[in-house]
Length: 432
Image (spheres, rainbow, N blue to C red):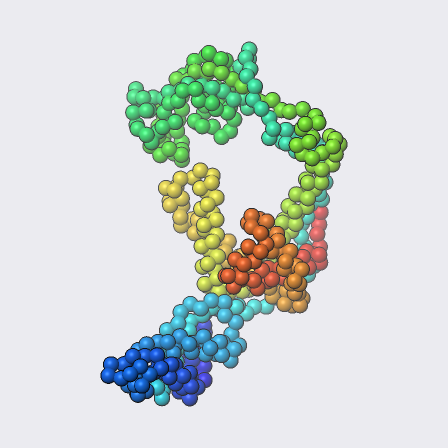
């Protein structure tokens, strides 16, 4: 077998492979024999046609099946012969198989980048001292009370921020009712007995300020200017006037920290609850600090390393980053039209993030090699359990899915990279 590698841009390689006929003839003849035994050739009984006749009759199918059988084996042999480390096969072309001439093909692939590791020990990082105060604990407990809060009817005072109000409203613009604009403005044009929370975000621009201070039974004219990015496209930029009547009001009532409340959070006393909340806050703060240090390490390593990542890997990561950005924007209520208008910007942001992420992945893997780090079976199983929990699957289900995608080694590699990151942080100079 003869092989030749052509270097293209970055990590792209073009691999030429040629195998002499005597290297593939036994495979071909074995396949031809199988065809002869199974094939039906006009004028001959099944399995009795001469080999030459069978070959002529089924030549196209024979060559195609032989190529499919031979390609994986000779590709692997060629990769090993050239000491290549493929990450993606981009294209396979010029596949040729002819009797007495041999077998040849050309593969375009991306390989792992070659680069020099930066100095990764004794990096200077900026950390923060994690301290949980009594005030933070109290604020967190108040948030727990907010989750169990109830609204009760209230009279005899004006509306305040945080109240729940029942209103009738109808809007008009240029002397015409907004309802005449059709179904597109349903809920925006008018409503009866509508309950709204006097808080951010507002259901209509400026309505929170207008409702604050109103009393039950009061009627009010409210000027509303719809911003250019309002969720309902047909009213963007329109100035409207709303007729608003306040019909009822409820106020938020927080539960007392009593036995029933403590039972909800599995605490025997208020002191026990404060301790529990404090520990949770400490865990969250520690994780935030860890994430902060990891982010700093990533930026330093990428900045200090000259590395040209594989184009196909970056492309795949860019697509994933783009979908993540788009999904977040949709969850924030940004319209598809606005997303389409910002597509180029999103693509650029996604690509920039993808390049950094891919570079860091290879750098950390290189450091894991340098430190001779491995992922034990126990560490692998623990990672599977943690991942399964986040995906709301059983570890067995997730492992089966990963195995189906032939990605078990990717999980072990993730563990190795995390261990490399831990070593870097352990050896860093952290100023607090």
